[in-house]
Image (cartoon, rainbow, N blue to C red; front, side, top):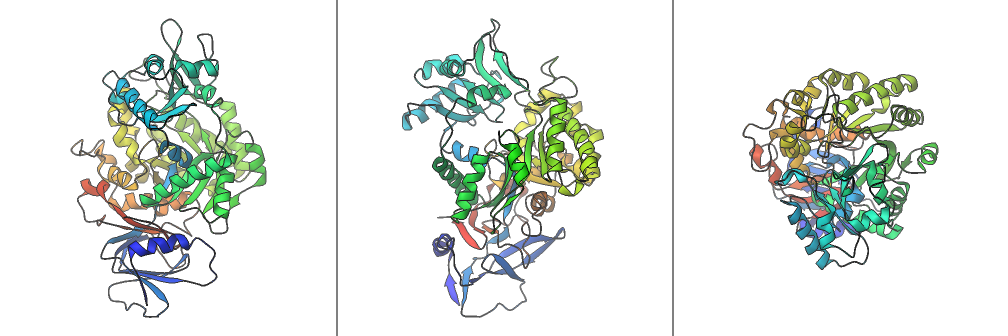
Length: 553
């Protein structure tokens, strides 16, 4: 046998991206392996794969093969799991977040400005200064920021800083001027230009109003797109993600993925959702699905956003916000437009994945799905609601009835727990982040993170699913603790059920003969460590399509 070790095999893995006509068999042994098969946990001690497909799993009492042409990798007793799948993230935005000012977890508006100034000094530009991650709910004031603080710090550059949820931006006066936004500007439907008592824009734009600025920011060229996506995918692999569902991508984004796939330069799989906002949306629908031969990239679904986010009070609620009387949030499309988009997409044979956070948005989307599914006989397409965050209790059974998947993000619950009660009051929390109620009603849950809004680290999501706690173990028994998932249910939501949500359960999501060799080696035993320590697990190595694409230094 040819012996390989983790430090060496990372170099071999990337070399393996190039075409190779010789079949290569590898055995990773001396591991503490787990996989879910038909919902049941199976253990093993070695895994053998040839090229991109799994040949066999070996248990403790089975004899390992001894052929001399097999590459042997010693797992050193570490835990081996199926590759983890994030069912809802934003790859390009994540890549850009690695290249822009990081304002996450800032303690005040002034702290955010200081963080941006420090970034600007290290990364000077004569163009737009971009950043993301601010969250006024973490600030003592709880108030939206203003253009004045940015004007003082950045007088020469236009500035655009995205809120943590991606549903609001904070800009300076120069950006407002370039976008032509003034006291007389009327917000587009589904958006809000926040104004002061005198009617002047404060510098915060919500949901569709953000497009007034986005439309004047120069687009990335093809080379920049590819390099940013590559940066993001390599980073995601380091967290143990072997596949992600990219929620809402443009045609330019699709072309960049296709170029990378052609060059065998994708380190993880991407299941892209075509954004209905792309001007050429109709053209792509008519052209049909996109799938690469190696299953590294595909597009067979569309992404629609029905409402905004809870933190910016853009989520569409049935009743008014508890902390803003008279306000019920924003639907981003008219009732007629939303129904038309859903029906058009289903008729074209595409899976429809609709962002809905508020209980009204979820109810409206379920209503539209019910009508369109009946008209197109497309229940088999497993349409999804992305987030499914605040639900009217009467709507929960409708997910299973309609075959609609709840695509959730567990860390949203532990990040939002304080803010959510302020926005909703206690009574509506009964349907908030209601994972257990969804499972009890036979719904399928696919888990993710919504990166870069949250960290892409899937162990953060596994921890939040199991404990309903933050990283300082609060609250003690977990927030809305009756909605916790078991460790098996949580892992299932990040593996086989996430694969099912992307119509890929025959290829991915579990470690079985004939399936793709996508797996990870991690430091701690997910099933035996203290549940409060799950988020601290470290990824040692990641394999995708039989290639090792990450190894910890």
